[in-house]
Length: 215
Image (cartoon, rainbow, N blue to C red; front, side, top):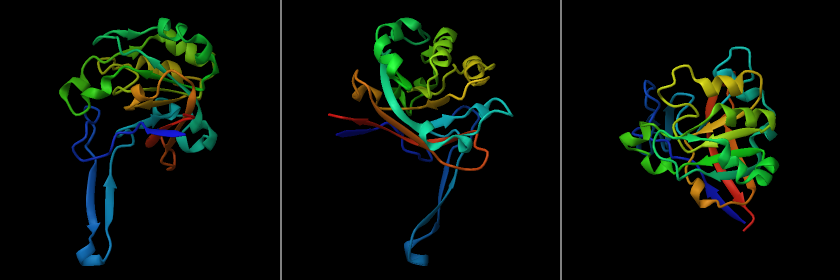
């Protein structure tokens, strides 16, 4: 068995969505003064490698804490889209290439390779995003979730959040953004886990995402 960490480390200097506050990690208890260390974490619910719930967009839709815990684990498949250039779209042709495995998967994770730009201005550029047709496939095939190694499932220029709205309108799919390391997994089905922090009425939360491979 091999386990691959797909999670960016939370730090005060990490990239955040434009307009969001950077996380704060304040040492409020110290070894010298208290005999132990304690850190006050202050961060936005969509910090780093995180999960979006339907309630992120719609007030009366499902929050993360309302999901059964088995929503966050299942068969995953990485779909290689790393040949895409800036501003290009992830279309159905990428799914069609691996259609049989895609049908078996509960989570589709789109590997663009954009995580190599983490920490640079390029990360906030025109990263590849999925089309509405791909979003429709995710809904029709009743996936548990979709993940990408980019800032969001919508481009930063799409203020309407078109894909978020389409996916979350009536379907309990979760969206995992800012993944990393997808290129290490390969082309076979594997066990994907992404467990969010459980807090009340959670519209989103950081996750520790991992891949569990049989070999």
